[in-house]
Length: 148
Image (tube, rainbow, N blue to C red; front, side):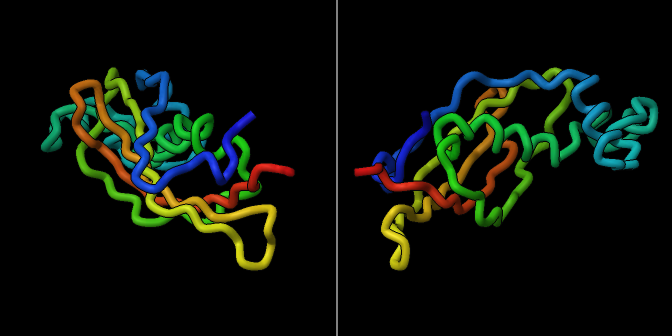
């Protein structure tokens, strides 16, 4: 289950599958669970008068889905997520959009103090059904080395 540090190569781009269509209720529940009161996520009439003309998907839901879609290929075998950085919202996401994700391996660094592990540094990108990037993030994950 999951990949080991030796299984990653700098420059590798991993396409995560399957994608995920965001439904109105997904966004509503997530927004309520996280206590986000911005009406752009909950009030269709209010949002219709905004520059986008309709409700926007909560950006932290887009972030959570991008990370979640990458788990099977990047961090399913992880010891720990160490850091999330440079989270950038590149374009709006709307109810009914389908998100896909890909991760590029930026660095693979064996630990200097514990030979059974190392740090994987990746950039994960979320793309909508039109192939437009809507979010990118970078993270460092503590990954075990292959036993033996």
